[in-house]
Length: 452
Image 1: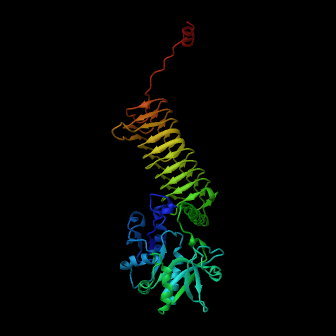
Image 2: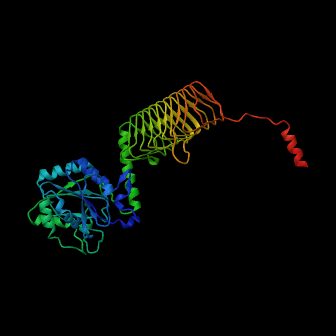
Image 3: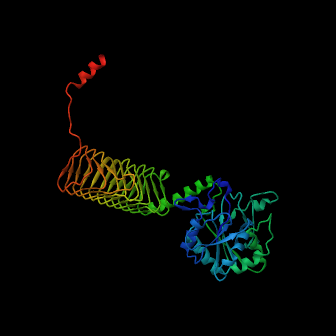
């Protein structure tokens, strides 16, 4: 069960708090994914009636609506009709995203081994200010959880406790739902930890499971806290890649989404973003100052100071600096998109070079072709996009424009400054420019006219 009914007003956002992005997926999707990976057979999200989260919860997540904000205990009661009474019920916060699947697996295993009615994950911290303190009796058994957001009336003994409630529980669902009915509301809210003394009084065992990672407590109530959680998530993501053989030259300036895959011996240079479902092969170099979104980069690819969106770069391709590859661009093996080149929805053949200052859109270019500086494919006639076909081993002159649809056959040439609007046969030279005419004495005549 994911508690996801908070309004998130401190985010100061028109978007629901739990829909905000955290390293490539919604905040609430992190605990959902952890539960799935830990082996949860069912995932239930408790949401507020006015805060729909269906688009970000993921496929197969059931939702229960908490009609009014009556606390975490009220959230569990709202989900009662969806809960499988025969299996352990794990409760997580939707805005505490960094819980690890391994911890959840170990927690459930210990809960089942001990036969407890409730097991609470606790953490011992040096500064427990503001957290619920775990109060134990003389035997060491859990007595209750005391909230300390407001310290008035609390004893020094309670305030001195360093063991705190993480907010992660596993319950026997029959017992917790029965005892929740006996919890007295406080200011209209029922708090889930208040059920623990009642479970104990009814003869059930309340156990604890110690977690050592304080990041389990990192919740998000505002954008400052979101930035802090993002920093920790980035540390974990990047550490995983580095331990797998990836060099990240400057982690502090690098951003990598959770779903990115990177092969061994690849180098990620400073100020680089790898976003979405990007996959990068081995021995590649990406950056500095590059952004790659939802793209596939093969082995030995080199990207320098460029922006790449939903593209495929095959082995040995090179891009940049200052290139922009838009959706649908395919650079085949050893192809090159050089300085100030933009490519969109085009297939660039193996070994083909688009070295600099060019726009190639809606084009198919064969292997081993060289397109000179200032190449333009004029693909749009203000009605539809048309394709340009350029064959293999073509030598395109500088400042050549191709007016689509047009076909330039294999081994053809184009003269510099040409505007090609008719097909060029194999091996032919296409010349489409005005013949040069020199006007003798022009400068002198112009100066004379100025004097007169």
